[in-house]
Image 1: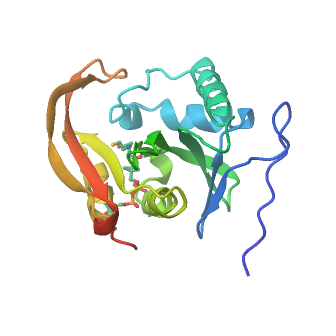
Image 2: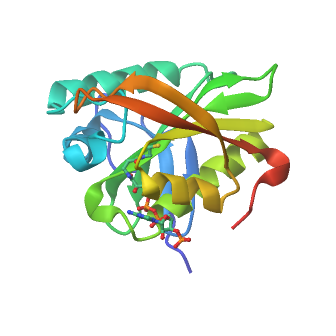
Length: 202
Ligand SMILES: CC(C)(COP(=O)(O)OP(=O)(O)OC[C@H]1O[C@@H](n2cnc3c(N)ncnc32)[C@H](O)[C@@H]1OP(=O)(O)O)[C@@H](O)C(=O)NCCC(=O)NCCS
């Protein structure tokens, strides 16, 4: 039988994390300030940051703290959150191995954006699929959305594969859409979208 999840001791922060989704191996929950080290470990890595638009390199403790404080603030309105920025914690190690977001939630339109990243050491082990599948289920089933917007930079095969396996379709290219903060390179973005009726449940 699965062990019950007991949140780690958290000082200076709410007594327990509020938003919790569970999969076999993962807990997906709000960020807390105790996650700073794991966040820096995951994002202070060019191999991860080069695929993300807004992650500077090097990625410092101050960057991590600012981000987590922003996430805590954005989680304030529990009834009508416009965004879920969540940590992905590996249950067996009690370690945050990545992050995911559902953001730009438009309840009137039934749409949202967002994405996912994992610490390089934990990639290629199916954790991305596990977390991403739960994210989609939460967006469509719990939030009642009907469409998820996403995208990936030219060359990001892992992201393309991950999205494709859940039913995302490539809808076009936004040329020179972003300056990647980590590399300084101007990147084309492949735009993707998932309609609820095309969602492949894995
Ligand atoms: C994208 C990312 C979250 C995928 O997570 P992951 O745990 O490595 O993915 P999984 O192990 O669940 O694999 C998902 C699918 O992608 C495939 N895949 C994984 N890495 C791949 C790679 N480098 N090239 C091609 N396919 C790859 C897997 O084979 C799998 O498909 P399958 O189930 O049909 O075999 C992870 O690679 C990552 O964090 N990358 C850096 C940040 C990033 O690119 N984020 C997305 C920005 S749009």
